[in-house]
Length: 156
Image (cartoon, rainbow, N blue to C red):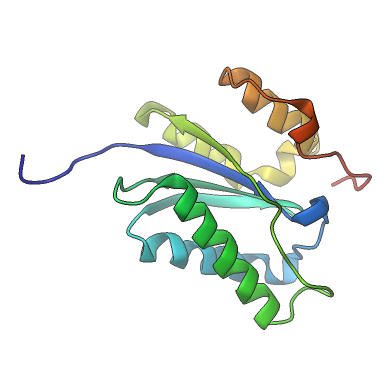
């Protein structure tokens, strides 16, 4: 075969270091645009991006020429540098190590996009920790509770 064809849809989830709620509405859209550029520069397709002050969800169509870990590393590194270079956070900004990745079929695209774009509404009912554990359980992913992102006192 002369070319590579793929259909891989992934939701990526990662959090701010220490689950600090520092992503402000005043610069959130610019951060999302910057992250979108990173994803597109690596030739992936960004389907949706959204989040809360302490975490971000990206829904992408992955091009198989780059590993998931490498893409997440690039997004985290470059967006942290952008936040710090623009002095958008009071202290030094960084993302927590690790991430969640969940795969979906084409038939789920609209539902996942809607879910990601409506994070504020969703988090009025569920905390991030409840949400994240529900993903792990729904996808049948075994996990060690000591490595799960810790709950914070901040309520959305």
